[in-house]
Length: 121
Length: 488
Figure (cartoon, rainbow over the protein chains, first blue to last red):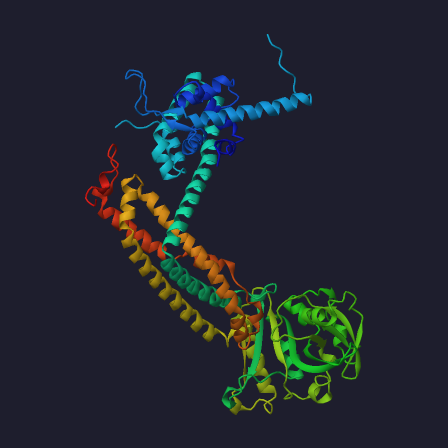
């Protein structure tokens, strides 16, 4: 399977998966930090529970979209019970492909006047 | 040791629905996340927020658990299929053995269930009885009934809500193509009412149909109507000639088993030339009928039997000429279900026992083969344990393999059952009229498939093997390869 086909085989991502990949796009995070970041970014509209979060992390990890990070914060800031996750190169490609897919869908919605282009400030 | 707060204990209990591997990987972290979430809610002080958190948590776990279990099951199945392909000889022999055991048992148990165990397919079938007159001292087990005797029993009994007569004859039916020899059930007018059979078309017999000289009427059996009249929707009202008389079809029976015999058509007693001739009507010893009854609600077979026996004793005292002392004349009352199956019972129970032994032998064979296989797979189990597979993970894998083998064996067994059931039905139809009710019993098949004989032995052996190697195979943190140290 070519890389592109492999990437597309994951699409569309579930909202929870996409938000987790987005949360990891700007750096490694542990589970609770991902959960907080998703809630903050979506204005609490997407709330992940522990079960949903780790179910998705498990699947993303087995699919190779994320990986456990070997880098740890400084000892004073670290909690050894926590694991940190990072976005893999492949995971980034899948996230980009999903964003492009959504953008294309949004463009089609705009063309049908189902959606107005937001005014730039 | 400090006691864990209640919410966390509840959360830990909740998490147990997730697969073992998943918990091994993520339980600690999940508890940490939940602890932090719960602390936030407590600090916020909102009861509704706490409720919302629990709702989301429960929903999250219960939607994740089936997905995770399914994922493990599919990967276990794929692994099991690979192992089965790799050991094709073992797999084929084990599956064939299982299929034979399961097939034979399913077939026999389906027969036993349909013939001996299942209630009669009539409303309150347990209230139906069969009455028999006998002269044991003369070696006559079933004397039959005469018209006068039936009238006496009908009038004098206090335990029955109805008593009907039956006998079977073969007549020739004219009027639809070639003359047709039809098996005819000659019955009382309330025969079908007593059994609780409602007609599929038209009606059954009325009391007026049973009066001497009444217009002759017929009720067709479902099979005869379907096979000989192509399920003609306008059959009611059509006329045919039989015994030099015009007979009008008044109804069609539904597809129910007919006891004591399968008949093509039914007629009321008054239409039978034998039953309605003068000699039969008047002579007490002209016996050719069988008698069925329905007990009144709350009456037991014992009570009905005592009632009927008292009538027999009365008849004997009143008409000593017809019931001589040296005959030992009396009557026997038995539940209809028992009566219909009495010839088949010993044979079927013997067959069931034989099939049980076949399954036992199949179990022993498969268990032995599995045991030998497990000895060969010790190293594989050791490697998997050393790589971090928990005990329950290995058991789950082995159970999946057994389950798959049982399912395949069960499906093949189903084919064996189908192949053998017709033979068994033909055989049993000589012993009991209930043979036509035989069909494959899905509950029985499932029971046999679930009791894959390898399960217990695999589990027991694996547990024993793992416990014996516990010090060597226990995965250690930071040294995942330690378990193989002494073997490599």
